[in-house]
Amino acid sequence: MTKDEKKHLNRVAELGCMVCRRMGYEGTPCEIHHIRAGQGWGRSSHFQTIGLCPEHHRGKTGVHGLGTKGFVRHYGFTEQELLEEVLELCKPS
Image 1 (cartoon, one colour):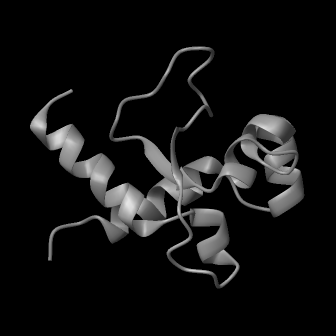
Image 2 (cartoon, rainbow, N blue to C red; image 1 turned 120 degrees about the vertical axis):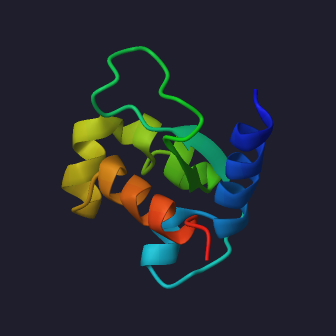
Protein backbone atom coordinates (compact mmCIF):
# COMPACT_ATOMS: atom_id res chain seq x y z
CA MET A 1 0.00 0.00 0.00
CA THR A 2 1.36 3.39 -0.97
CA LYS A 3 1.51 6.42 1.30
CA ASP A 4 -1.25 8.10 -0.74
CA GLU A 5 -3.49 5.02 -0.49
CA LYS A 6 -3.00 4.84 3.27
CA LYS A 7 -3.76 8.57 3.63
CA HIS A 8 -6.94 8.16 1.56
CA LEU A 9 -8.12 5.12 3.55
CA ASN A 10 -7.57 7.00 6.81
CA ARG A 11 -9.69 9.88 5.50
CA VAL A 12 -12.44 7.46 4.41
CA ALA A 13 -12.43 5.93 7.90
CA GLU A 14 -12.70 9.40 9.47
CA LEU A 15 -15.91 10.02 7.49
CA GLY A 16 -17.62 7.07 9.17
CA CYS A 17 -20.35 4.89 7.70
CA MET A 18 -21.74 6.47 4.55
CA VAL A 19 -25.14 4.78 4.93
CA CYS A 20 -25.50 6.02 8.52
CA ARG A 21 -24.34 9.45 7.33
CA ARG A 22 -27.20 9.54 4.80
CA MET A 23 -29.57 8.66 7.64
CA GLY A 24 -28.30 11.63 9.69
CA TYR A 25 -25.82 9.78 11.92
CA GLU A 26 -22.43 11.24 11.03
CA GLY A 27 -19.19 9.77 12.35
CA THR A 28 -20.42 6.22 12.96
CA PRO A 29 -17.31 4.00 13.34
CA CYS A 30 -16.77 2.05 10.16
CA GLU A 31 -14.92 -0.63 8.30
CA ILE A 32 -13.38 -0.02 4.89
CA HIS A 33 -15.38 -1.54 2.04
CA HIS A 34 -13.93 -1.88 -1.46
CA ILE A 35 -16.90 -1.34 -3.75
CA ARG A 36 -18.03 -4.41 -5.65
CA ALA A 37 -20.29 -2.97 -8.32
CA GLY A 38 -18.75 -3.63 -11.71
CA GLN A 39 -15.73 -5.41 -10.22
CA GLY A 40 -16.80 -9.02 -10.64
CA TRP A 41 -15.11 -11.04 -7.91
CA GLY A 42 -11.97 -8.93 -7.92
CA ARG A 43 -11.28 -6.19 -5.41
CA SER A 44 -11.37 -2.56 -6.46
CA SER A 45 -8.49 -0.17 -5.74
CA HIS A 46 -7.95 1.45 -2.35
CA PHE A 47 -9.28 4.68 -3.89
CA GLN A 48 -12.62 3.00 -4.63
CA THR A 49 -13.61 2.49 -1.02
CA ILE A 50 -16.37 3.62 1.28
CA GLY A 51 -16.77 3.41 5.02
CA LEU A 52 -19.55 1.15 6.28
CA CYS A 53 -20.40 0.28 9.90
CA PRO A 54 -20.38 -3.47 10.67
CA GLU A 55 -24.15 -3.78 10.08
CA HIS A 56 -24.14 -1.92 6.76
CA HIS A 57 -21.00 -3.80 5.69
CA ARG A 58 -21.42 -7.42 6.84
CA GLY A 59 -24.82 -7.50 8.55
CA LYS A 60 -28.18 -8.74 7.28
CA THR A 61 -28.97 -5.23 5.97
CA GLY A 62 -25.45 -4.66 4.67
CA VAL A 63 -23.92 -4.86 1.23
CA HIS A 64 -22.50 -8.34 1.86
CA GLY A 65 -25.71 -9.55 3.53
CA LEU A 66 -28.10 -8.21 0.88
CA GLY A 67 -25.81 -8.43 -2.13
CA THR A 68 -25.21 -5.53 -4.51
CA LYS A 69 -28.67 -5.62 -6.11
CA GLY A 70 -30.46 -6.19 -2.80
CA PHE A 71 -28.54 -3.29 -1.25
CA VAL A 72 -29.82 -0.94 -3.99
CA ARG A 73 -33.40 -2.23 -3.62
CA HIS A 74 -33.27 -1.80 0.16
CA TYR A 75 -31.66 1.65 0.34
CA GLY A 76 -32.42 3.23 -3.04
CA PHE A 77 -28.80 4.16 -3.78
CA THR A 78 -25.73 2.36 -5.07
CA GLU A 79 -22.22 1.80 -3.79
CA GLN A 80 -21.08 3.98 -6.70
CA GLU A 81 -23.22 6.88 -5.48
CA LEU A 82 -21.73 6.51 -2.00
CA LEU A 83 -18.25 6.41 -3.54
CA GLU A 84 -18.92 9.65 -5.40
CA GLU A 85 -19.88 11.28 -2.07
CA VAL A 86 -16.72 9.95 -0.43
CA LEU A 87 -14.52 11.26 -3.23
CA GLU A 88 -16.20 14.67 -3.04
CA LEU A 89 -15.74 14.82 0.75
CA CYS A 90 -12.08 13.73 0.43
CA LYS A 91 -11.15 16.39 -2.13
CA PRO A 92 -8.37 18.66 -0.92
CA SER A 93 -9.66 22.08 0.17
